[in-house]
Image 1 (cartoon, rainbow, N blue to C red):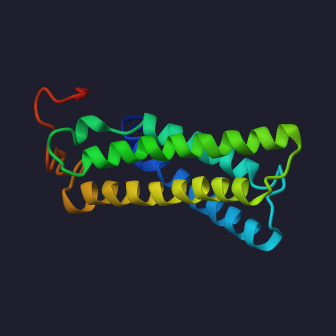
Image 2 (cartoon, rainbow, N blue to C red; image 1 turned 60 degrees about the horizontal axis):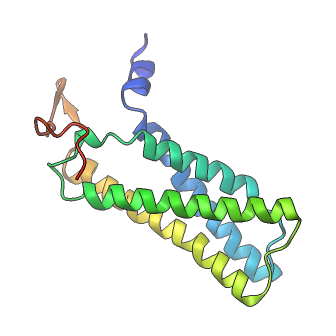
Length: 164
């Protein structure tokens, strides 16, 4: 098996995580532009973006290599919690959009638009802050980084898969 395929199966998180980051930010920007330009959100507009973004966020959370960082990084807990918040927000926004499309209803009215827009933007902010903490772990603390076949900061023995 080639090195790329082996890494894909051993370490999928760094490969899949960038897609939901980009999609959530683009989807939230699309929502903001739509609300400003059209004063309402048509039911099907942006739906596919949010569905794929939510699915990607679920995959990113599911592939997070917590055993690499648990107990050795102060950034791990905020990263993990914010990833969960991001996933929940993305799922709520995607469900709202799916519901609106199914019912063929535009998102309009000041309260609904504001609530929807706040959730959409909150998902984008959450994913960006989650990425910040993930970047801290990789680029500042070298979590999950190998040199000459050895982890720079190996996991603490017994911390593999343990939860608080």
